[in-house]
Every structure is written in structure tokens, then in C-alpha cells.
Image (cartoon, rainbow, N blue to C red):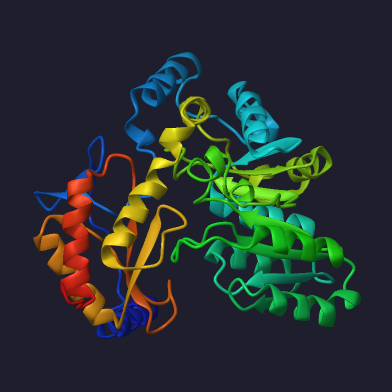
Length: 386
């Protein structure tokens, strides 16, 4: 066996023994929340298409029209010939929704974070980051070669301690967090973090991948609090509630112009396909026109948490922490037998001992099925007395 193959095989064996090996499973999604796997249909509670826009007729029609007019691919990076006319409209619309001066669209949320962070800070600078921030935020932080200081999850006092200790030694500082945490569904204390950033002349950046479209009347987590949040760097994705693909940064015009010149993941990546950009514009039309619909996923999630006896959901995401990996896998199999697709989340995506079922909710989930799922989780997963 070639040494490379031997290395890969040994790693795979180690992962398999720990029940941590991942496998890709063909999954056909239908309109709404039904999926098909291995010839069986399931009601999915494991999709981030929070508003069911990936199959919305208006979104699909916009993509078709752009395909007919502009073709399939962008053809080049945005700085060459890939900046097709739809980009300007999408960026204007996103900036308006987020209450920012300007916007820059990237190829994905991962590309946004790994492009923006190294473009803003470097080896002499400081990053103070929530310990549960998304993996791509940590990846961008490492790529910047800045000093990285994680703070305890949502602990503003700990972030303050780190800034007080390290800020003076660095010319620039980024304060990084998710707006909505993807595995826990809780919100970052953005107003308090905004005040902290201003106090220490740090730049607050919040990843709103799971907030845009469903919180703050569709405007996202920055706008979901009882008081204003000063977040000069609002990034997010177009692949969750927006229903398509891509990422963005909403910020001041000088910052956005800097990204177009210095963010390597924009400069050296092919632009998004025109149909994808057109679909995102159509989704934004729907969000602005139907704010009550945009609020529905959180209401569905809160119905579930009330029935199970969990804390009120703050977002469409609800974690059911089981603990050990094998027990979590068994719980997922049990729910699959009952017709529910609830994918288990295991380390290293979450910390050891916190393997969980991660549920996400959409307007298309029938209340009756949420009630049935809640009863199964309450009694057969969590072992609560009826």
C-alpha cells in the first residue's frame, strides 16, 4: 500500500472506532420539508432552508430568467469579467436590509470569513473571538496570523478581560462572534459586545448566517435585540434562509471597497452564477414583503421547545443535547424509524460529551408533526415522564 493510502486508511479506522467517521448520503429534497434517502421518505428537521425559499416559485422563476439572459456561469472572477449586472442590485438590496452603507458579495460564507478577516488584520494585530464561533471564523483568524484570544461563550466580561489585557499591545483588534450560533441556536449579546468594542477601539464582526431572513423582521440578529447593536461588520450567507448560495459583508463603503481589492477569496474566485444572484434578489423581495412569514420559523421552534420542556427557542435552531456519541446516533436512528430525519451532530463539530440532535424549523413543518416529534424527543430521547 502506498504510504499516503496507508496514512488515510489508518485515520479512517481511528475515526470509525470512535464513531466519528462521516459518510455522504444521497438526499433528494422536495418542495417543503420532505426528503428521500435510500428509497424512503422522511420529514426533515435538518435543513437550513429556514423559509423554504429554495423551492419557492418566485425564486426559481428569477433564476430561470437570469439563466436565459446571462447564461449559467459568471465566467471569471468579479475583478475580471465575472461582475455581471445583477451583483450591484443584490449588494444594494443587502445593504439596505442590514442598514449598512455598502455590501460586498462573496462565493460563500466560508469564503467571506476567510477573506475578510485576513484583509482587516495581520500578524501584529489581535483577535478576540467567542469560543463557539463557527469553524470558518476560526479559519480566517488563523489565516490572518493575528494573536487569537478566545473568550468563554457569550461572556462579555471575559471578553473585556482579554481586551484589557492584550489590546494595548496591538495596533488593531477584531472582536468576532456568531450572531446566531449554529449548533446551539442562541443569540450573541450584540448590543453589549458593540459597546465593548467601542470602548477598546476594536472592530466588531458578527456572522449572521442563521439570522438573516428570520430574526429582526428579516434583517437579522443585529436587529433582533431590544436595543440597537453597533456592528460595523455584518457578514452572513445566502445559503440558509435566502435559499441559494453565497456570502456577503455589509459595512461602510471604504471597508467594502477595501475588500474588493484585498480579500483574496474574492479577488481569486470566480463570481457567483447569475441565476444564483437573481434568486437571492427574489428571496429578499419576499422577506421584505412578508415580515410575518419571516418570523414563522422561530414560532415553530418555540412550539417545539415548549412541548419538550426546553428553554424558549431564540432562533429556528434547537439543540437536544444527548451527550455521548453512540446514544445520539441511536436517538437519530429511532427518529428515522418514526419518519423524521434529524441528523446527529458529533465532535469535533461540538465539544466532547455534548453530541446532540440539531433541529431546525421552517413554516412548512406541520404543527401536528412538531407535536409528534416533541413527544418522541421528550419521552424516548430525554426520558422525561409523560
